[in-house]
Image 1 (cartoon, rainbow, N blue to C red):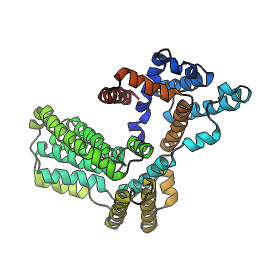
Image 2: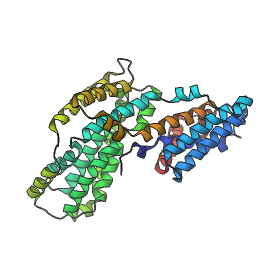
Image 3: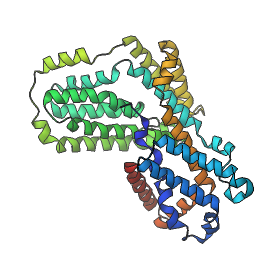
Image 4: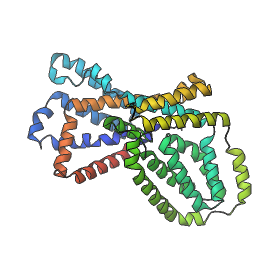
Length: 380
């Protein structure tokens, strides 16, 4: 299966839009006139339609989002040409709504990860985890979780998992334990690690771009809590899978390390050094981009461009196989759909609904948003 960033879809953030519409329209007199126009109901219907198509897997999410965005523009330029009440958003507004900072940041990081994949780094990290654990399954699980979390904080966490999974399954097979006892902790650690930084996950990039948060501000607000979550999850999973780990078959550790070392090694040391240098430069630019008033996407683009130049990677092959164009198009179309919801007043109604439900309490509002978004992300 091809790695994809869509596993952590921001569609979950939009569930309040779909759920609250019919609850809020009659509740707020000040919003009734705004919510009664045809543009509002069309934008709302399109949003719910796209949600349904994705949730029930009627079609690929990229196609669903593309269809939704096209429908909004079609209504604007057909019915809207005769009745202003049907105008949702113009083409110019749609283009402006596409946050290219997010798109270019994702694209550049895909390029960097695409080059790193050619070095064998991810598989080597999994091997080194086993080597450090010296055959102790409890230690192996903890080290794998830590390595996965740290890697996912700076690189595409889904690709990290896709490349580490084969090594993990191989190790689990030798130890005669269920691979899920190692894979599930890794998945959780990947999600926690990806949450810690601005570039760890697409939703982080979107939030950072919209809220104008710098890389450092993101780390300051999330790194500590993510470390706590990682520590708690390590303790939890070690306890939860304790019986499975105790059943692990004793193997000749030295022989096992020798076999893994031959199979999972760095395949291109020169390329790895080049990638490490460019990644370090990229992270440094991420750290100082706020002081330079520079968009984070520029930092990623500089790192990716320099890496492609010095590594002499086939750029055509890179564009064809490493750039997830369907993911980028999905985000672009999603921005258009959200812009339609915002332009017709749906976003404001959601804000009023959350304020009404929380009775002005910021704590209650945060809890409502967190739970609704979390539950939605588990489904979509």
